[in-house]
Image (tube, rainbow, N blue to C red; front, side, top):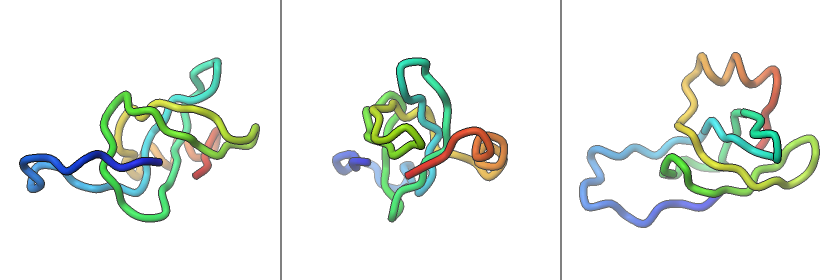
Length: 78
């Protein structure tokens, strides 16, 4: 996944290491982890590794622990 350019107010933005991503032709949802915390925006295009291979996805939001537990069982990757 790629990082955002620096923002003018770094205090309000926080880097995360797990994101909810819509991916694939059907728009499946999954929680995907990065190797290190990065800042991504909603709608930003990312490449994700899924059980089907490398797919293009769109970031929806940083993943909370609850979302990771719920979606992690259905779809996850890196």
